[in-house]
Length: 249
Image (cartoon, rainbow, N blue to C red; front, side, top):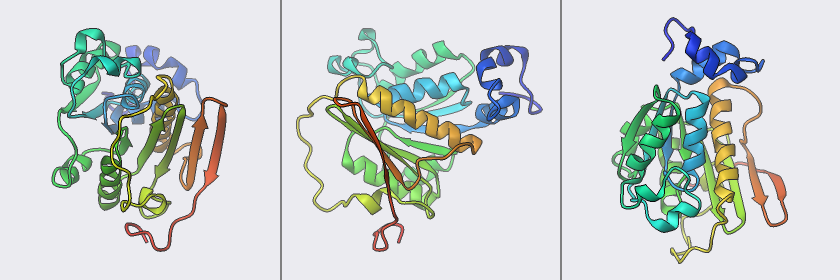
């Protein structure tokens, strides 16, 4: 962690490519090192998110997942290795991320987010990443981030398709504006996804977190970015707040 808002020589070398960017510079890198991001899900999406946030110099990363690693995860969940099978996903991820940056501060949550623990946990972070794989968790994150007034990134993947959007609670289109809890399909045996799809979408989520922390560029607010990798069609769909949204209207 930088002292007196300056980087040490090792940090200047590690983040040299960031520092050369006018939008970041040394001042911006200090902001990244002081930032705290919560990644909910340490699987397909959470793997690239956590790797790129750690590599970018996010000083504190919270990693939440209640599952253990199994063999079928390894086709896409690059935080984990064959030796990780049977271990808690957050424990497996810890050493991989610390190997990348020993100075990273990691807070592990080997359990799921719920309505009771969400307020306290979310209050500790500057930005939240939804890297979950089920609708119940996504609606919970939407409500919790709205209540906590925390900016967050949603993403979903299926087969060869991925989508993502960024939400600034109270000012932008929210997840509940687009999707309705009533009638959510029951969980079924998943088809795919192609292993590289979460890599693409998760990398975008990490970029959105960095942009939000630095207040640079144009975030994916009021916009749903979709990617069909079979045709390599990428679309940005304009969104509008739902005046009858049960959460943010």
